[in-house]
Amino acid sequence: MGEYNKPLPNVNDDSNEFWAGCKEHQLRFQKCKVCGHVRWPASILCPMCHSKETKWIVSEGKGRVYSFAVYHVAYHPGFENDLPYVVADVELEEGPRLVTNIVGCRPDDVKCEMPVEVVWDDVTEKFSLPKFKPCC
Amino acid sequence: MKRVAIVGIGHGKFGVRSDASLRELTFEAVKACLDDAGVSLKEVDSMVTGIAGDEFSLALQPSAQVHDYIGFYPKPNFRVEGACATGSMALRTGWMNVASGLADLVLVVGVEKMTEVPTSVATEIMGRGGDSMWEYPFGTTFPGYYAMMANAHMAEYGTTEEQMAMVAVKNHYYGHLNPFAHMQKEVTLEKALTSFTVAHPLKLFDCSLITDGAAAVLLASEERAKTISTKPVWIAGLGLATDTMRITERESLTSIAASREAARIAYQMAGVGPADIDVATVHDCFTIAEIVAYEDLGFCEKGEGGKLIEAKETYVDGRTPVNVDGGLKSKGHPLGATGVSMAIEITKQLRGEAGQRQVKDAEIGLTHNVGGTGQVAAVHIFRRE
Ligand SMILES: [Zn+2]
Image (cartoon, rainbow over all chains, first blue to last red; front, side, top):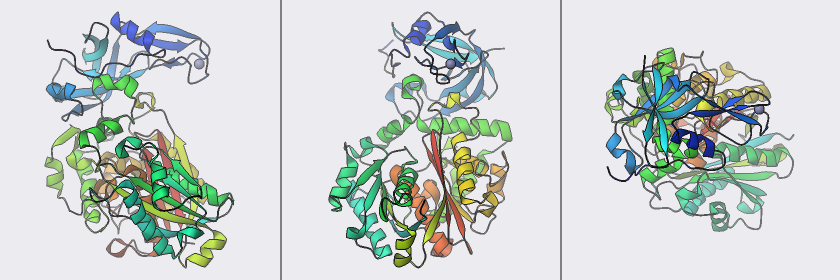
């Protein structure tokens, strides 16, 4: 396997805990202790009430495809060999939605509302990316 | 607040302008605008420059290049930025200058030189209109976000790829009649439908163009307007609204909430409703965006946008003519210039100077300009009287 040549996550104080969770194959979300707002992506402050008090919750990793796009042109050379690939907006059962890839099926088979579950792509020693595959 | 009118318009040629720098493009539009108004630059009190990206022009303070080149110093020049909605935000800033009484004559310029960098780099820069920090590792690009909107709209309302292609056919038809348009070429439905896929369901002809260009308008207070123009076009309503950067935090992908909110404010301020709009320019960065705009602006019911274009109701002789200047799709989309160019088209329509593309007896016009994937939207309403 060659060196991983796609963009890697940008880790800072906001995102550190999320990507650390991914490394352990856990999809972690924040819930505001003050107003109860569940948020993704992670941030130091709650966008609803500006509180810093937060609780991490772990998603079961199940959801549905809200919408998707099948890429036939790559802007980044790292994705050229993956064409056509699928980027989707997946809604988790716990509520939050995230941008991710759909893998494990033909791009033509991806549909809105399709049930999916998380599958981990260990792209480097430091990073695992949460992707999703069809499930029942 | 003072009433504000557009008393001068200047539109540069949109296209791949390897013949002109950012400064020269600006000069071309400013010169045409001052000539149209019959005003000298010395009489202008201040200037607002809309430029979206430093990176396209490879310059740190491009607005200074512009006021330097046209010899505007020592008078004020504000630079405004709002991604693809930059031009409308510049117009709004100019309006504030005149409405507040701070200035009587304000030049609003929108300009972008996008072809300085290769298409792949330009697409990559525009992709940052999404949230690069969280979404880049998954290979997202700008067209991909609108492809997700298209798939959501198709799934929820039965909108079809044919209907999206019909938007391209209409806008290219009018673009071919607009001498300032980037691509003055008609396309057939078949050609649009069989062009290569960029991000399914969007094909090449569903996407707007990467374009260089500039556009300028001169704004005047009521007292000054009367001395300058016999056909002033009044800014009757302005709405500006924002939304989250990330599409995943939005309630729906089948609508742009910032557009709906901006429209609500603008209609209220102008005291008119969607049925009163005689002609509109909307933000068709992708064909699906025009269909969604029909719905968000109230030109049809939610989910009926595809049927509206299918019934040709947005052609010049339809119920609500939309983008009869070619739109971003065919006229081109030089980010900073787009909103100003929209205001110019509406001014021409309300003055009765749109030639073959003229909407009969147009009195009230609307512009709709979206930044990024909808994190900002501006709606302006213009009137003849
Ligand atoms: Zn909170």
